[in-house]
Length: 78
Image (tube, rainbow, N blue to C red):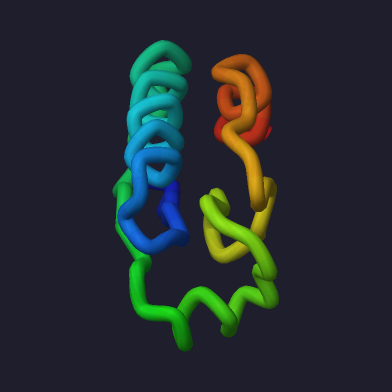
C-alpha cells in the first residue's frame, strides 16, 4: 500500500488536490493511505516552498499546483 501525503494548510486547493489524488488512486485500482499534513514544520521537512504539495512514499512529486488526474495516476503506478 502506498502512503500519499497532502501537504498544506487545509485551503481549498489542498482539498481539491486530495480529491483528485483519491480519484486517481480509485481509477488506477491502487490501494493508498491518504494523510493530511498541516503542521508547517512537517511541511518544511520536505523542503517544499509552496503548497499544496503531493508526496508519494515520502517523495515529493508535485508542489505549488494541482497536477492532472493522469499525472497523479502515472506517479501512483510507477
